[in-house]
Image 1 (cartoon, rainbow, N blue to C red):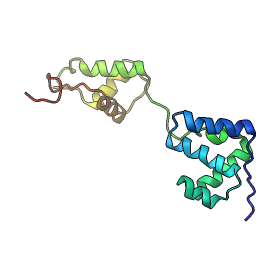
Image 2: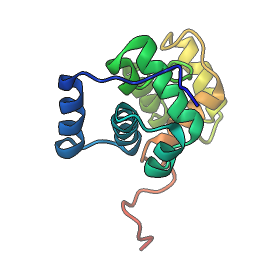
Image 3: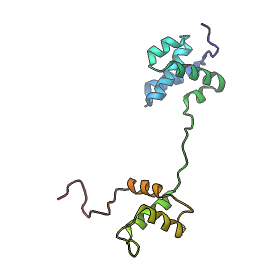
Image 4: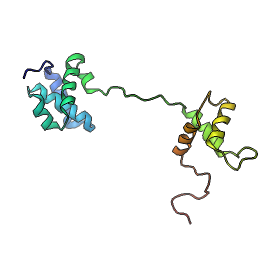
Amino acid sequence: MRKTAVVQLTQEQRADLTRRLERNPLTGRQRRRHQILLLADQGQTDEPIVQATGASLSTVERLRKRFVRAGLQAALAEKPRRGAPAKLDGKQEALIVALACSDAPQGQAKWSARLLANRAVEMEIVESVSESTVRRLLKKTRSSRGRSGRGVSRK
């Protein structure tokens, strides 16, 4: 079967990929991409490449196409992944944690995530924030408002 996306590396590209494989610490995904391109350059079809690298057939096909369309750097680089940007920056996080460590408001035994979110908006630390975001933020911190001891021992 004739492939429409034929990988043809230059001598420099081939030497660079081989050098990176031998000397550079690579993640499994990066290593697999390097191997796929080198094997494809040798004229191997997709099935033997899949067997040799452990990649899926669609991965090999996509990598070939990406190399032909956009070049070596695009084939080796990670594409940006989805995900929402962070809602709070470091300064805002620090201020909310400091607020949580302060004394609770009058009439409350301790801070709740809802109270903290509302107070952060009142104090103009943030424009808006949900209580679940505040809860996740506090969960990331190592502080415990309930205990004064440190470490894993309860003694």
